[in-house]
Image (cartoon, rainbow, N blue to C red):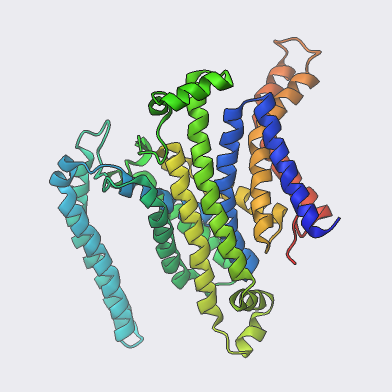
Amino acid sequence: MTGYLRNVALFSLMGLALALTGMFQSWVLALTILNMSLISAMMALGVNMQWGYAGIFNVGIMGFTAFGGLAAVLIAMPPVPEAWAAGGVGAILGLMLGAGTIFAAILVWNRLPPGKLRVVALIATLVVGYMITRFVFAPATAAIVRVNPATEGYLGGLGLPVILSWPVGAIMAAGLAWVVGKIALGLRSDYLAIATLGISEIVIAVLKFEAWLTRGVNNVVGIPRAVPRPVTLQQYEWVQGLSQRLGLGLSETARLVELTGYAIMFAIVLGALIWLSEKALNSPWGRMMRAIRDNETAARAMGKDVTRRHLMVFILGSGVCGLAGAMMVTLDGQLTPGSYEPLRFTFLIWVMVIVGGSGNNWGAVLGAFIIWFLWVQAEPAGRWMMDTLTSGLSADSPIRQHLMAQAAHTRLIMMGLALLLMLRFAPRGLIPER
């Protein structure tokens, strides 16, 4: 079997698994898996750009994803006039003062000659700037949080169509990547991983605790949808007719229509990303990036600016992750900062890239579909397995109760097992780089 036919067969098997899920479990579940697989595929593409193209080991994926998700709140949610009146100006002024403090500190460090005077001046600039910023920023944000804290307590957004948050999320994540790259890309790979993980934790901590911006752990709910909600869809005559033809309940049909609409939109975006990624990978730019990945010393000897190229691909990959983050928040209709777990889901995305095939865009997409499918189905499969193994025991047996309670952890075992098997029998992935 040729490589092309083998790849088609792998994707066909994945499609068959989704179809069987719809027939034997639920079409709502199948479409939900499909939508999250499409979003995960975009994240895997972003990581593949960084690692597969340039060898950049980024462990801060969730930070860029969460920062992109923030765009859905800032763009789509309506503004809260009372919060703006209470402390909006003060909060914006405080942010400007904080940015000014950082800029002044950079000027001090660059303009003064090395020595004790430069260190003292830098510390003095940071301390004074922090005190002034805190004096303005803290009262303003406290006033914002006190405005109807049960349902609001934040500034809100611009009230624009939510679909605009997708490119804005990509731009926001790319901007954050530029800042991170300027700081961390000069580090060795292991130190770079630690730095990106730490910065990811900082970003998520800001989203959790800056309630004036994101409502923190109270979450932002009711984010406008890119597709009408099922309650709205039920009122359409064509949805009612479709429900009768399919023999399904009206609410289930409306939910299927909603998920199908999202799947079409996500598939269009993913298709555009794959097309652009393939064009870039097979261009002189892509060959240059692979040459830098394989031998930085030789690339530098040929006059290539390795640091600049690393920064470029780091920004591109992080922007794609930010785009996926904005789309995920749009699908969920809520921003929940507490759900972004850097180590747990970063590991999952890396498994997708490794299983699919590092350096191959189609491999990253296939890996995302396979791993997310296993991630969702592992828990019910684990419960079925534990129930089968303990079927001979009584319902109140301590062994049976313990095994059934631990069945949810089967998904972690399955992910580790899948990674180990791939590294042993197909270390280059299911669709390896050519």
